[in-house]
Amino acid sequence: MQENIQENTVTQEQLETKQDSIIKNFDEDLLKGLRVDPNYNEPVLDQVLRIAIYDEYHAYETYRKILEKFGNVSPFSNILEAEIRHYQELALILEKHQVPMPVNDWEGKIEAPNSLLEASEIAVAAEIDNIKMYDNLISYAKDYPDVLDTLYRMQAASYNNHLPSFRQAVINHSSSDTQVNVNEIYQQYSQHNIDEAISKMDEFGQMASKFASGQVTQEDMLKLLSNTNLSFIGGALLGAVGAGVLSQMTKEKSEDIQEDEEV
Image 1 (cartoon, one colour):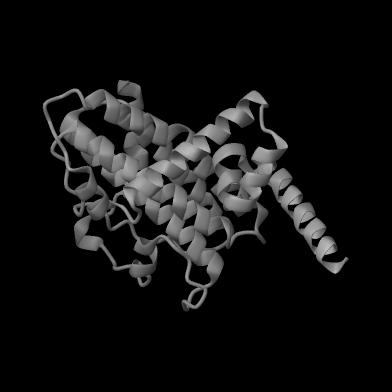
Image 2 (cartoon, rainbow, N blue to C red):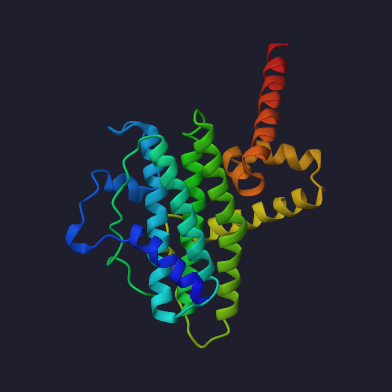
């Protein structure tokens, strides 16, 4: 583990920005809103990639702050390393498409939570926001296969690995005497309603299990295609290749409906 900490040191220097040299991001409100604005005076691809990497900054600084206070605790230590890898991969994509890097101005703005239970609840809220953010970004990246593939994989990692790990951490730490106000946490740290968000996660989880076991029925697929945003399911459950299959199925379904209407 000491090797991991040492390996992260160099990358940490890339991610951190000293307070005396911080330059305000010109699109700060857009970055924090986690959504593309087609009417904003900035190319859409630039928005997509800057929003994505800025949220990775936020995740990195949040989990680093937690580790500073509570020590090398799981799953925060492992997921911090994953966030670093995400940052590195996104940085290469930004460089490839000549998109200027946003400033990491999160250092010093994040306060450590009072307990590991609170930290875990905050992490769950953050990962749900992250997943929904990628849902939005993916919808604007259709013309860039390399970007689309990266976004799908980032979203899949959050849904399949990070979110379940933090939800389990909430369960593990719920037996402690510490109490937290979950609704207050979501009001302060999340852009989504807790009941709606968790309900949606459970629905996707059930569908993921069916995909994994090969038990998806035609009825399940029709429900999936009619009630769910395709880009989210593609990223969260299948990744870019599987999403392409679903996309083709959706196209065929739409063509069938159009033919029926013409008849």
